[in-house]
Length: 133
Image (cartoon, rainbow, N blue to C red; front, side, top):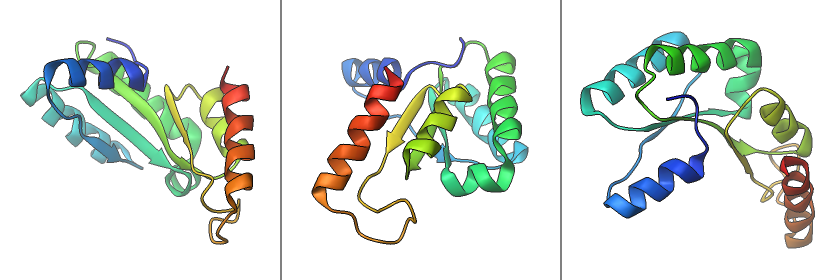
């Protein structure tokens, strides 16, 4: 199975009464270990990268590692998830890099430190939703 949207995995889990593990990754060894465990347990998996992990590992490496996992384990549903995107640019680059799930976290401003207002959160989340569509 190719990389799949988060909704597909979560709907199946809800219909069949099980949970799905989500793992933050930033290197090959982590992804390999996660996929070996997913195969052993015949489980779908959410492989996610934070903004920091994407900066550390670089998007091209992560994208290709996750795509390699999908090729090596074609029978396992894999979600490639952007965890806690902090700006429109972060989420846009995740979409451009083939992430099948993107989370915009507008609780903090783009610096990742300053608490954001409710209106800021709604506005930036709306922009990401429009971009995703």
